[in-house]
Image 1 (cartoon, rainbow, N blue to C red):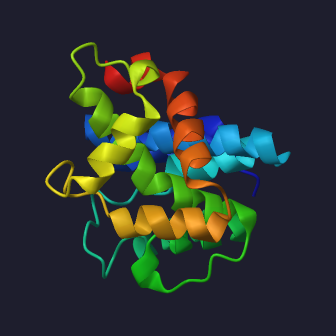
Image 2: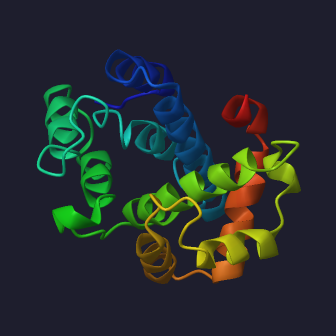
Length: 185
């Protein structure tokens, strides 16, 4: 079944009520859309993948259940296999191979989106568009800042995607800036 954004949003909001998790889903969706456009890929498919990557997390937060339960639910709904594989691969502990560009991109943007949003929250103006690359890089070195964000996953994602570190961080900042009112409101 080819899932469109409206259907994916329905699934997301059925399982996710937390405002912060919804905002994270929108951030990852936005970064995925931007990269799909850059790479000449299916924008809606990448959008749906970003939107749904954590939809089961609120109900099934343990590493023994997430993202496995979500993938089961989506499989029952007939969601395309490449989306399921990308979602499974976004959690490094699943040991699911990230063997598609979509899967590699999802892994590369997931933790970074959360980190950039954290950087935005501590700004007096709460504007992602005013975040500077050097500020993000400095905060990445500060292990006490946004300590829940896995920096190793950020670095591994950049390496697997095969992109320049600074360009990737700036690309995601620029992408999230486009919807900063939704993310930071």
